[in-house]
Amino acid sequence: KNQVEQSPQSLIILEGKNCTLQCNYTVSPFSNLRWYKQDTGRGPVSLTIMTFSENTKSNGRYTATLDADTKQSSLHITASQLSDSASYICVVSARQAGTALIFGKGTTLSVSS
Amino acid sequence: SQTIHQWPATLVQPVGSPLSLECTVEGTSNPNLYWYRQAAGRGLQLLFYSVGIGQISSEVPQNLSASRPQDRQFILSSKKLLLSDSGFYLCAWGRTTSSYNEQFFGPGTRLTVL
Image 1 (cartoon, each protein chain N blue to C red):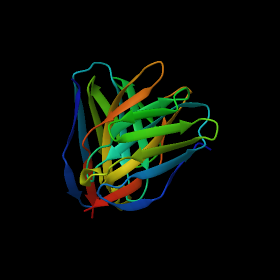
Image 2 (cartoon, helix red, strand yellow; image 1 turned 120 degrees about the vertical axis):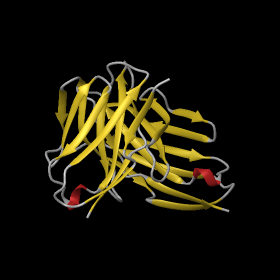
Image 3 (spheres, rainbow over the protein chains, first blue to last red; image 1 turned 60 degrees about the vertical axis):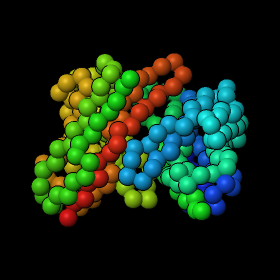
Image 4 (cartoon, rainbow over the protein chains, first blue to last red; image 1 turned 90 degrees about the horizontal axis):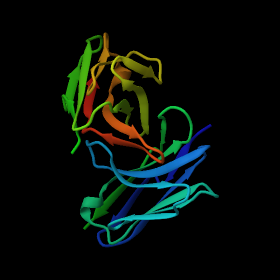
């Protein structure tokens, strides 16, 4: 069964600190993996997208890694800011007919001052 | 540039009442369109998707229906709402390219059924 598991479920860090969010998936055949940021009450916004041939991609203070062999991805946030407080969702697309994406439940990050 | 709109932003409806949520996309033609529901503490669940006018695919059989009367308009409906229909409804549009199945989300509608 295609699944995406994220950890931790929630995380609280101090402003300025770094953090890493994890994503494990069992989607096959794999097409690509993306990380979304979703502010409370808003729609998700894409941060990064990676295919199986890409193992790292950055977007400002956000750096995503992908290990297609172990089927793991991480999202590293550097020098966190209060505005980073949000839910971060890992989404995997399967390389098959149709347009289905498999969504993780997200990690809720709270950055405090 | 492309933009996606949803309305209303919030909605409170009694059980048994009808529902109509609207989504429109600007700045692109023949997009793929999607309706998702996000329940508290759960991941996004794909409800419907459409690859063209009048073409609707349902992912989860339920109390809801979708229609696409125009190329860039997607409507989510119900004849009689249930308590379990409460949630955050997101519309998304996308294009299928050789590598990505990129989807762009709207601002969402918060539906509370009482």
